[in-house]
Image 1 (cartoon, rainbow, N blue to C red):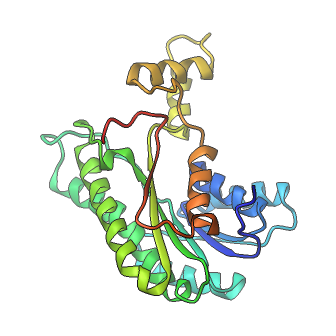
Image 2 (image 1 turned 60 degrees about the horizontal axis):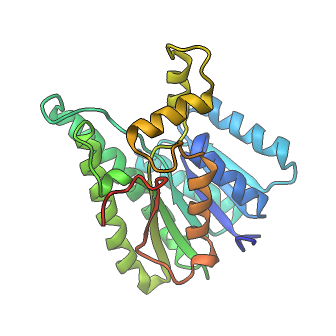
Length: 264
């Protein structure tokens, strides 16, 4: 089944690797015009080369941009419009987790988490909202975490910030219905990433395959599917929510955790 995004303009923040790049690839393969950004210019160029090597005729635009810097995001939005046209879909993917409990989390760490989880969404939404208002299928889709509903004590600052992002997503969904802009999110569980691969390189049992090693982690954490997610799996959920296929869905938080969720 097609995602029905051919010819539409999509923006993905944090699109240089992982889930973001997987979403970019799906959108390009489906015929969308895609812009993405990232802080690291070298990784950004590598992702652009990867996409163009597989899809030589792709209509794409990339720009180095720190989503926490409002002026950079505003310029990115102007450049996207100039190169690809009005935006139909915005996927906010920037962000990472912080391992800490209450006693070892300093005030500045709390502020950094709030800034990263909140303003990595607020800045792009502000920059692209006027364009989205003119789209027949306008959508904003945020990458969030299962921590928003199921906090972990060793990730207290991240869990709290993720809960705030979930609330923000619901609030925007209600406010933006007047503009015809849908706002949804996905709640990630444990997904394969460069960080996991770095840990795999330092494993104690060198005979253990990647599949066995990640499978053991999943089993030990109690993930019913007994494996980590692959980047393309949450990416497909993102593209679905962003696409016309989800035209009657807004304010939704789609769980993509392999059954790890314990909330009602």
